[in-house]
Amino acid sequence: MTASPLIELNDGNAIPQVGLGVWQTPNDVAVEAVRTALEAGYRHVDTAAIYGNEDGVGQGLRASGAPRAEVFVTTKVWNENQGYDAALKATKDSLRRLGLEQVDLLLIHWPSPSRGLYVDTWKALIQARKDGLARSIGVSNFEPEHLERIIGETGVAPALNQIELHPRFQQKAARAANEAHGVRTESWSPLGRGLLLADPVVANIARKHGRTPAQVIIRWHIENGLIVIPKSVTPSRIRENFDVFNFALDADDLAAFAGLDDPDGRIGPHPMTAKF
Image 1: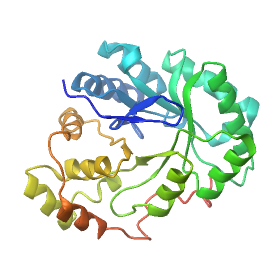
Image 2: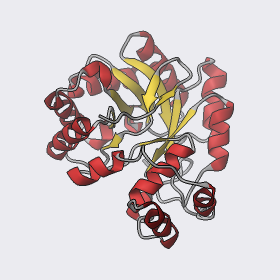
Image 3: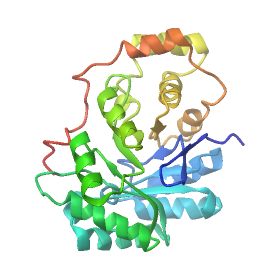
Image 4: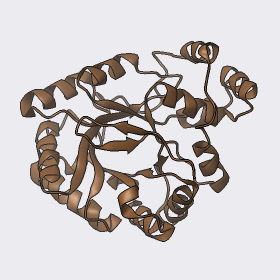
């Protein structure tokens, strides 16, 4: 069985570079999606409390028969649960729903700067790691100034920062800021919510390699050193999205992808102005 490459984190742990995302996947569908992915060779699943499918992810993990020690599970603390005590309680609630004693990675889902609680929430995640509730801790959707503040006030850098990132919105400045702090970058919406699959540049690269548009986009993330969590609930596509380790993009392909970058290419909310 093909295995995903591992990316080393700044705390000494390692994360499989390709995982399954389960955003907008109902509980019952998540069970089968996770089981299918783990049977196909995935060893990394990314969920969140707000997704409402932690129960299904846990059921899928158990149904797959994959040893718990081999599977990297990520979940996230939602904005309404920010603050020290609330975040610790939310973490324990997530573990209960997942049916796990520990997650491999616990993230703050958004900085939600209007709440002014992300530093206290980060301190809660540091405590959660000390208490053995999470092996690694990190953030999601943090801008460079948010990173600098939590590191400056706690001395602890996140293991990774999960941000919107795809060929139409390549986030080079954010990636450089992450790297400057030793923080890995993970891509959410790595396929641009499917909008990039019909792009003629992507289609040409896919034809050249005899691959699907999704496969060459996932390969682009891999070759840029990014951790990538494509979402699908279709068994054939789940397997297809993992079949990306036996080909490589060349310099012409990478140059063509570079030309797709657009500073206005963001699809999701902006972390500074998101109203939730």
